[in-house]
Length: 110
Image (tube, rainbow, N blue to C red; front, side, top):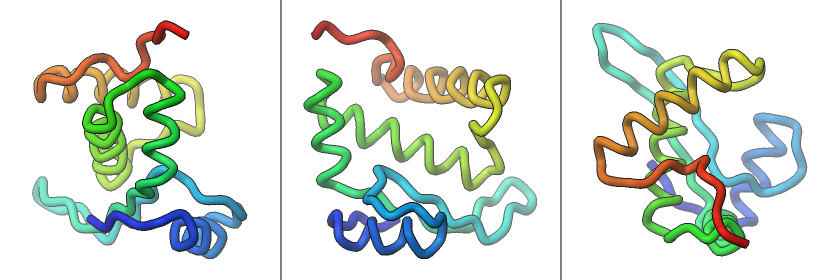
């Protein structure tokens, strides 16, 4: 796991996803065998901080959510299709609840 600034996140996102902007989390899976996940997760601290503030979440909870999100990507989960996104979100909520964090998709006052 690596925590980076916006400039590095933008470079990585452009290089590997073709999107010229910093993003909150990137996952780079290497392999998944016998229950073991091998890969890298890159978290962009300024984007995560900005999102947490805008969404009324604690920074810790948002970092936890995006770490879980990245780990699920390493395990092969995706959210490109609506059904897959719903499945992934449900799993995120379940795992975060076990870790003591609130539902990251619950509406926040604003």
